[in-house]
Length: 106
Image (cartoon, rainbow, N blue to C red):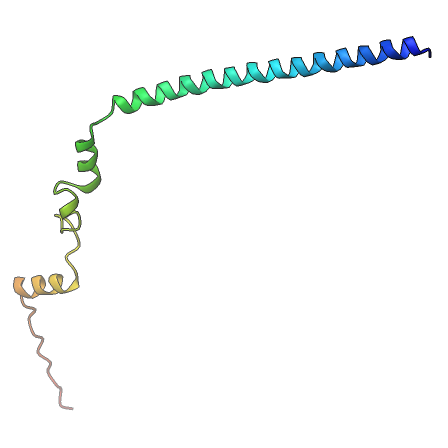
């Protein structure tokens, strides 16, 4: 290989490397732009869905119940009243008849 051929081969390799680097940068940029456009479209759909939803007061009402946050822990209709309340209600409703036991003599 002559010195001139070695110089031409080095220039060719340098040109190929520069081409590959430029091509890689352009492909990266194209992919990035496509991803940004996709994210913008998804964000637009998500933002429209949120914007068309219920207002904050309705969301808070759903979250905390009819009394709001201050009355969240208050008892509600249908809640379990507890064992003592059930026993008191049963005693007040109707006392149980006492059973008479007879002893047989025998």
